[in-house]
Image 1: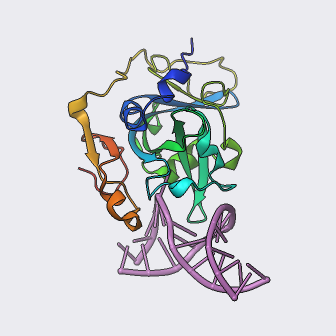
Image 2: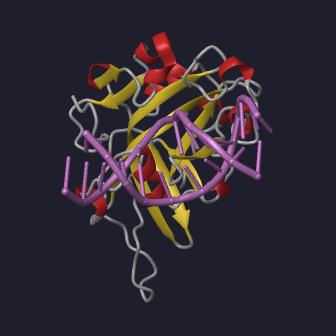
Length: 215
DNA sequence: GTACAGATTGAG
DNA sequence: TCAATCTGTACT
């Protein structure tokens, strides 16, 4: 039933993963309820060379150590003292590369219209993510993972109903190349020439991308 | 121990 | 345009 995305997907070049993550479904299970969102915006952070990366110059600290895990793990940290930032590691263990998930299009009847996950901080707040997810393995976790499609969505329900399915609508999972927009990354102007790299990717004209620099 | 910046957000 | 808010990191 569930088709979790496997390790091989993540253990690849970061720029490839960052683009192919667009259109994938992030599933978060909280008790019996599931929250699902389609990834519509990402940013790539590439290892010791990338001045904007927390692993710049090979730095390893208590905060960023999970960034060095094998692809498919979560690296999460607190920013500005109040917002968590969800990153998905890529490449082999020891390579500190990751993809920052910046925005989700909520899937489900009620949330569908609201921009509750349009921004890296909002997204973590919506999904209830925090430090306890640092190092979590998306390939094995029972509380958060990714899927290629979301044909059947279970949504929060009254207790007396076993569960119900929201429509039978199937969403396409792959975003065509022509639908992917690449821009410079947000909030890292201090990174010199690295700040200019077009390593932010989002789905063209999608209303759920984060507020800044929308099309 | 103390200082300070930061991969943000929402209100004004 | 700006303040909220606090951890990690660098320095004394």
